[in-house]
Image 1 (cartoon, rainbow, N blue to C red):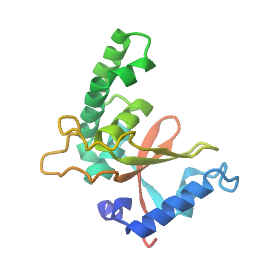
Image 2: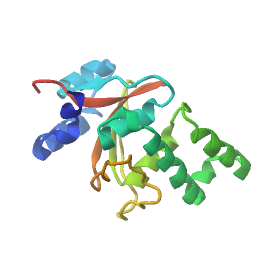
Image 3: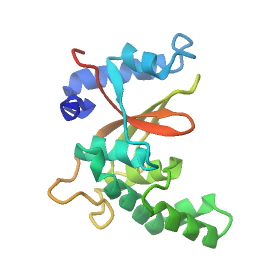
Image 4: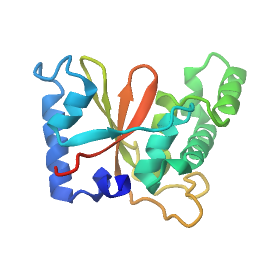
Length: 191
């Protein structure tokens, strides 16, 4: 049932209108301090709870990209591979190369929490556009877009067996309950 409520299943015009409304409302004071659930409901959306096992960011991305949170290992592997390949960009966030290597080793492990770097890496690896609605009182709508227009590197953008590559610039929708948990965002039934 939840798969049929993925926002990617929503008609393009309706989805684009919803995104425009969220983008316009985010800087306004009207929803400042509103609960995350209230914000989402205002736009006909709701959270789909992801398992809280340390993989929630990757689970929410897998649900959006592939239709199931069970495929969370694929975006995790893609994030780590992408960061390794682009160490010139991602490595600058660490004091030393050894620290960056340890970070990648830890991030490759099941259950290690994703962060803003892994979110950026998945966006780049799959060429998707991530909309993140947060529980923060301000700046609660974040958009991550791929820097380039290159097609995904199929050695990095790993898809689960039997599941096709998501379309280029696919929009994915996540909620972030700061500072601990990511969920997927789906349409509210009847919206």
